Length: 221
Ligand SMILES: Cc1cc2nc3c(=O)[nH]c(=O)nc-3n(C[C@H](O)[C@H](O)[C@H](O)COP(=O)(O)O)c2cc1C
Image (tube, rainbow, N blue to C red):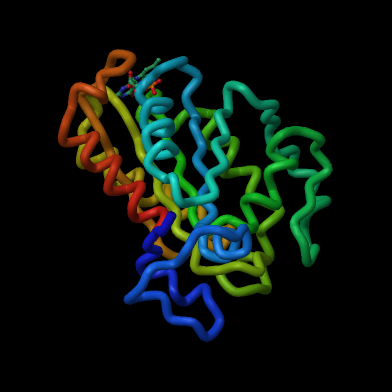
């Protein structure tokens, strides 16, 4: 079995695979080459538009190491502002929940995607809660105010909604996704899919699904 790995040659030391094929026989090759992508579903509606987008991207990313974190299925508690995480060199949090367990994945990932519905003109409270839990990455004296050891990550935010004014939600989404700079993100994308109020509406929009596939490509590039 052979596989091309495109632009990932920089993850090899000294070997240039850009013009050839790499036999995918060893775990080492895969481990070194595979991008680590974290996908967050911040909608509580089962089989809703957000979940469909997350599942579609996860299915597209066959050659990446994908972690899917569906907030409704996880124990996700709010930041208590106890500040126990502050001033530390590594990310730690005293909360004992699934977001704390995810912190090493957040640190190690190459890209993160969050999908959230718009509720009352904003991302869901779950989505906001997740971003607030990035506080263990906050370090006021460090580059980009982040204590991550891994900068250059990509972050994408997809907002799905009904009838809110698209251009306003787009500005809001572009601002909101910058919150992921805390965890070392330096490249950002935000997308708004409007006029999809019902569960599964997104599947009937070819243009939106095309954008979803393109986003998957960008996350794993
Ligand atoms: C409580 C609530 C508030 C909502 N507020 C808005 C809103 O302010 N603007 C909007 O365009 N859509 C709003 N919607 C519609 C959802 O954003 C829309 O149905 C979306 O597709 C839901 O995504 P999901 O299927 O992933 O859960 C709201 C829906 C709910 C349940």
